[in-house]
Image 1 (cartoon, rainbow, N blue to C red):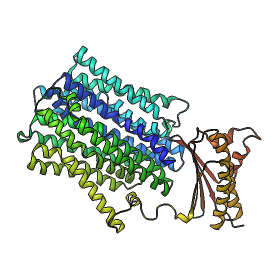
Image 2 (image 1 turned 45 degrees about the horizontal axis):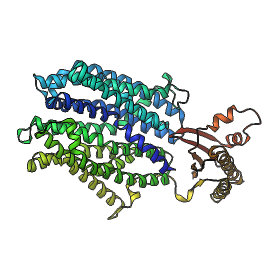
Image 3 (image 1 turned 120 degrees about the vertical axis):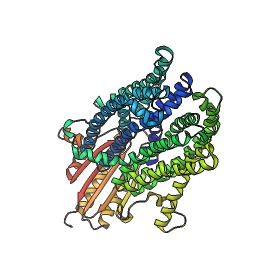
Image 4 (image 1 turned 30 degrees about the vertical axis):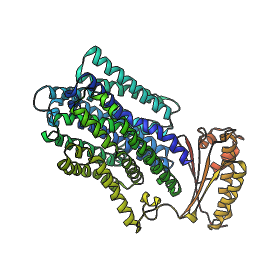
Length: 585
């Protein structure tokens, strides 16, 4: 079931990763086609500031993703709703502050970014900052919608929102360039309006009765906000590292020996192309983060292993595909931004090809980093983010730039990724006392995680006969662990009733449905988890609302359980039943 879920999530997550980079890509193409190389240079200088907005939006998005994935893993819909309400509120406040500050201080900020104290370059940079900052609430809101739509299983709506944003940005950029002649301000404003269009489309779900999240002012609390911010901090390290690297490389490239403004324009084009291509590793990272957080809080070691193996395979396949594709597509992509032959175009084509070589190791690092993130290894995640995103590539750019000038600077991305991957490999080998680590070692789980295999029973159910078999196995499993007949019979009965109900009414005539059953013994508490990919069905509310004499099997399960939790997320029904060991019979 995990493999099927990854396939469903990965496409939508990769496409949703374009919510920021796609608008930047389109803007860069339009600027290059209609406004020229100097405008491209202004766009490149404004990029670090735009990344700041993206960094905070990504921090809140990741914080919500981790926080709500943890509560989903624990089966607490109430805590999930608190996370949803709190992140919505804080995003509105912060994005409003960005809008006001960047709009009012656009000229000093342009000068600080290297556009000079006067002249057309400063004006173009300030104009673009002004236009783009108007869309801060829209871009931040679009980023925050992504994890919630993913967790709600609304992949099609997510894709529709991205498509709307793309079409709107292209149309508005063309109108600005050909009709209104709004220059760099108009280009930034076009992106802003397209973000609002995506927010409008994606936001429809949250006002529908089918929405699994509920917004309430009562659920907004300082404690939950602190948790969201703490969970999102590792993303800030990653985005801040990108901002620092962009600033450092711009400074290095501005040196006459490295090409000056021509090289900055080429770098702007390179990073726009690579950032769009990096939707692959961003998508891989997003799926790894969500699933690892849910599975970790369920203490599901088997699920984590299955996820790791699948994600390694997808990282290698997709990363290699994108790297090879860009070797051939680089000239065509660069000419979209820089149509006229010249130094900038030549440098950008070579740079795109060299940067593309780093995508495959970046996919692997993104997967491992986000698994650490989802499993609570925050310090390790932050360290990887800073080293991979800023320290290693900056050092590589400085050293290789001295040796090979601009060509050496273009190699900094690949060099940084390889060095980081080597560092992770050495750490895992030393930690596990092996020369070559096993794949499972890469999970880097803390000692004592989960329960021993002998205290865990996991089975897949496909037929009614499987229900009977698993029910009998579970009863015997409980007895062997010292539980009396009362607890053993209750757990076996729960599996029988819920299994028959799911296979009969959930599966129906469809043969591609799955039901997994997990029985776990820890301390004096039994945990019984059912997970299926059938249509949404909440047995808790069903049992409470059915008339007397109807739904007796489900009502019986609810009655004999000590505690029951239900969540519907990622198109999966998750029912967790807790039972305490009673006095032995």
